[in-house]
Image (cartoon, rainbow, N blue to C red; front, side, top):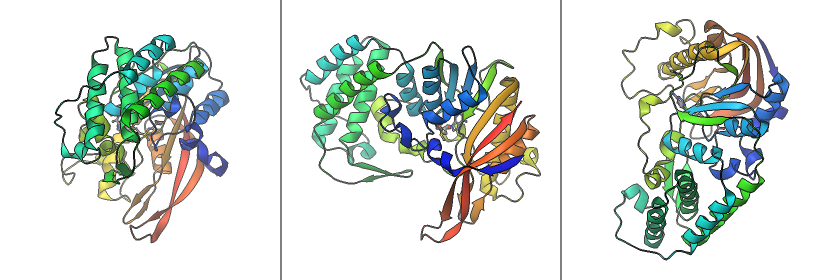
Amino acid sequence: MKVVEKLQLGRLVTPIPDRRRPIYNWFPLKEAFSRDLVHLLAKTWGLGEGDLVLDTFCGVATAPLACKELGLDCVGFDVHPVLLFASQVKLRDYNVEELRVVARELVKSRYERQEIEAPSFVTRVFSKPALEDMTSFKRKILEVEDEGVRDFLLLGLVNAAMDCSWAYKDGAAIKVVKRPTPPLRKALERWLYGMCSDVEKFKAGAGKCRVERCDARKLKLEDESVDAVITSPPYLGKQEYIHAYRIEQWILGLEGPFADEFIGVRARDIGEEDFSEVAGFVEDKPLEARPYFKDMLLVLRELHRVCKRGARICFVTSDGCYPTGVVEVCETLSKLAERAGFRAKRVIIVNRRYCTTPRRKKLGVAREGLLLWEK
Ligand SMILES: C[S@@+](CC[C@H](N)C(=O)[O-])C[C@H]1O[C@@H](n2cnc3c(N)ncnc32)[C@H](O)[C@@H]1O
């Protein structure tokens, strides 16, 4: 397995190139990669019509959306209800004229304010009028019969509400930073009209793309059905998104997520857990990091089962930062992929970042890389 460095690809593993790209920017996730990464891999691998791409950790559906543009078939899985909701809205086909009519009706509608019961993590980030306006719009949206249109409006409302909130996300923590905010009606108008224009600008190919709630350790796919995998698993020790979307989740009225559903996360004590499956791979890692590698081996075995012979796989990942120092991930995951039956071809290092203590003392360099394998 060759390890090479191509730092010029660093931007492609971030969502920065998609900041203004229609539909991609409907629900930004700082852990997302870019459309251009998917396009580059699809071109390099010569993927074409009829090929099925899998993203086992699809987040906000960057890979499925990029495949939709390219006319490839794609299935994306995730376990986070808010990210899945946003993904489904981003991937649907719409009648833009119909959307424009209902969006206009909604933003012009009269407020019907009522007493609201909301948990304190919600009330502390909204002014009383903003919260009442949001609830009034939400009630009207829930009366819309067509599920696709309703979800489109709800995503617009969530984005607008967050623009009008005092929430400041700092990792997993949601802080309150009071600042002047626009009236919700204005923000909603801006979001919905912008989203309608995006629907018009986005050029979809003929492929079939969908996302579904599914744990990557138990894939709902047939054996040998996948041509390529483009995915980015949770980074070791960095799963802020588990808690970062509590407010959006409350607005949408969604259930979960449950800690045990996430790779490497345990609701119970791991002191008694058996790591013999990954013996030889984790002894140099801190105890808290071991469930991550054990779970990833399950994912890799499932991927091997569903991939066709000759399938190409790209994992975007990074070494982990722990208080004790850097925990190497890139080579270990590639070796685990070999244990699962893949040929590990290359590791391309695309970023190098310092791991630091909370007081900014440097602990070492964590590499971010593309892990390239083949079945
Ligand atoms: C690094 S993010 C992926 C971002 C994605 N590439 C994008 O562009 O939006 C990792 C994702 O893995 C998901 N995840 C964590 N554990 C999972 C599991 N057991 N099965 C499926 N998805 C999982 C998280 O909810 C998160 O959305």
